Length: 123
Image (cartoon, rainbow, N blue to C red; front, side):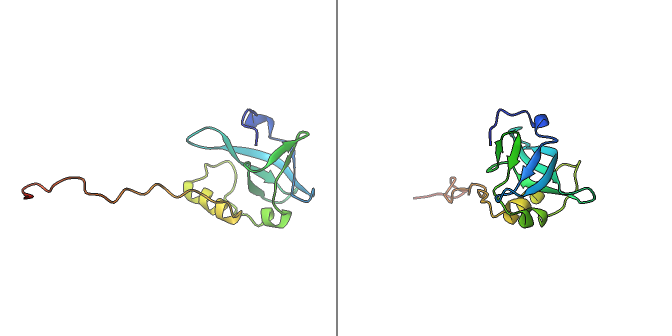
């Protein structure tokens, strides 16, 4: 998704699934803690429905509407964490897994000798 868009300008826009079916209206936008880049949108799926979280990357903003590359049923079945609260890293991971998006694992610590033990002598 375009990174130069003000996240406040996304709120109130209509969202559509991969088939062009209307999902709902963007209610809130969640930013990445480390980068400040918009990462998730909470979409109000109906008048009395809950908000469903969708990833903004790989979604596209086209003609003032958000096009999400997933089926409406998958979006409506996304984990419900409520809106207006911070998403924890665990909740984000659940969302990534729900949408089948790969999340890079944390880097491994190299397996090497960091030096001699105190008091040990090598020949």
